[in-house]
Image (cartoon, rainbow, N blue to C red; front, side, top):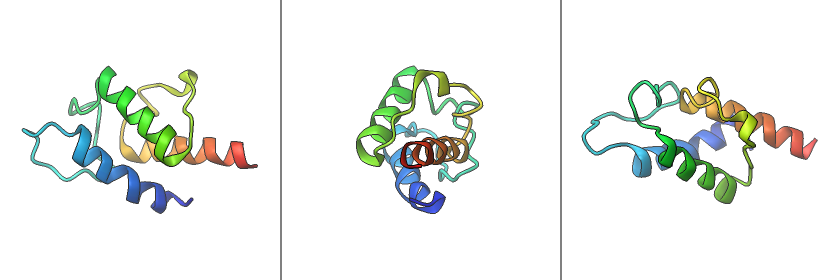
Length: 88
């Protein structure tokens, strides 16, 4: 999958399932997920399950860092890196 393919699936999931209803924003690749409080430990676990089950990429614990989960764009970069390593 390309970065655009991952974005097309990840952004709507975050928008529909993780975004607090009181935040009236549209999630894009630059949305600061941690800064806005969109991701907490529970929502990160939900997101990781979605990535594993729907996108077919397992994110190991050593990749769980604030830098890697700062925005959807940084998450997509990690997904692509791991997918390439698993398929290469």
